Structure formats: C-alpha cells, structure tokens
Amino acid sequence: MGVRPIYGRMRGWVWIALAFTWCLQGCSEGATERKVDALELMALEDVDGTLRPDEVHLRAQLLQPLEGEQPNLGMRNSAYWVKVSGWQGAPRNARIILDNPTVDSIDAVILDGPRVLGRQRSGAAYGKTEDLIPTFNLPLNVDHELWFRVRSTKPLVLPFTLTQVDRVKTMRVQRDLALALYTGIVLAILIYNCFLAFSTGQQAYFSYVLVVLTVGLVQWSFNGYDRLIWGHIPWLARNGLTIMGASSGLAALIFAREFLEVRRYTPKWNRWIQGLLVIYASALLAALVESATFGV
Image (cartoon, rainbow, N blue to C red; front, side, top):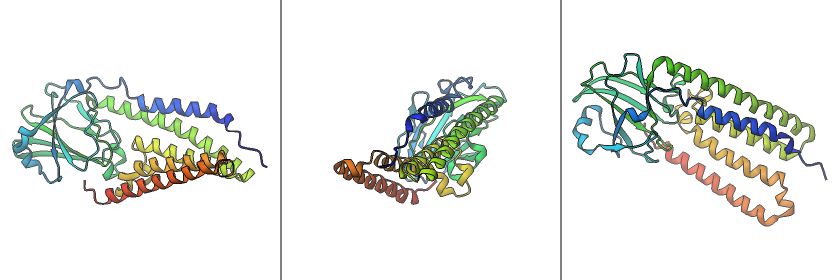
C-alpha cells in the first residue's frame, strides 16, 4: 500500500489562503464615506421583465422601501426597478456604486417623468472587466429621478453606496492587490500538488488539485474577476459562479472519496457519496437549463 498524502503540511498554506480571502472580502470596508443609510432605496417588482423606463413613473405607487445596508431581494427571475434618492446635495465628484459584481444586469436610468435623460448599462452579463465595481453618475438636476433596473440569476443583494470617484479607484487597487496575493497562494498550492501528483501517481493528489482550482475560481467569480477569463462569452460570464460553485462541491466529494479510500474501507458511505455526486450534478444541470432561458 502506498504512502498516503501528507495534507497536514498544507495547513499553513490553507490558513494563509483563508486570511487573504477574508482580506479580499473586507478590503473595501471603510473605503466609502456615505453608506447606504444615507440613501433611500425603494423597489418594485417587474415579474415578466418587460417594463420600459418611460413606464416606471406609472408604477410609483407600488414601490416598497428597502431596509439595511445590503438589501436582499432573494433569487427570482423577476427584474426589479429600484429608485434611489438621498443623493441630492452630494458633491459633483460623487458617484453611486453597486458593490456586487455578481449581478447579471444593471441599468441606471435618469428620468424626468416619462422622459429618459440618460442611461448607463453594466453587469456580469455584459462581461465588462472595467465594471467590477459598477460606478454610476448622479443626475445634474436634483429634481430628476435616479432608477436602477437590476436582474440576476444569483441572490440579488444590493449594497448601494454613495462615495467620491477617487475613493472608487482606491477600492479597485486594494481589491486587485488582495486578489493578486490570493491567486499567488492558490497557484503555489496548485504547482506543489501537481508535482506530487505526477511524481507519485496517486489519484488523491489529482483530485486535490481539482479542489484547489475550483475553489480558487469560485473566489474569482465572487469578485467578478472571472470575466477576465470568459468575459467575452456572456452566458458563461453570467453563470460562471454557479458552475464553479457546483464544481467545487463535486471536486470536494471526489477528493474525500479518494483521500479516505471510502470505496475500500466503507463501501456503504461510498454509495452515499455517489448519491451526493448525482444530486450535485443534477442541481448544476437544472441551474444551467433554467439560466439558458433567463433574459437580462
């Protein structure tokens, strides 16, 4: 019987990777000057996603207030129109950002009653790498209205923030640096385990490489950087997080089965793992089929 992989040696690397993951997720904290509490958010649901910007003012009575710093509208096929106010009186270099790069489509619309005065489009479905932190201009006239049409196949979390344009640049630099360090650690783990995999020929090492690769791509997807890889393919840019999330679960199950030698020592548990693999694969297939009919 061959020597089992000594994964305990990797614990230090894992803790470092987790630390940089935490840094990546929290590096923008404190970077903004006026949180969403300074803004007033009200939303209405557009179930079939056909409501035009010039028709929004006719549905104003259906608006419902959104509470909290990160309002969560759940996971639905509906589009939502969000009216943002409270930005009046902000300096000219102020911008509104939506710090959620997983939202599929974001349309910022400036309205004067039924008249559309300006429109700006962003979101993962359009694969724009410069929009990892979508930034939107404020209306020049305080009497005009600022609306956002948002839609996503993922949970629709809306952390709107009012900040200055130079602060957005700082946020981008901090996030790029944190992700670069995280990616370097992931690559080091991959190279080390690839060497061990080809040197020893043990299946557990190959499955562990798959786990590290998919988990690393999940973190990229959470922060929108997967657009650098497949941003030119809108469907894949929109569903990259779903695919990588399910793939990481599949890879973890395969690794657990290989590393623990479940098929040899506990055949009963091996059947359970096989069942979980089928469930994960079915859920992934169902999500992809549903997203194929999703409009932006």
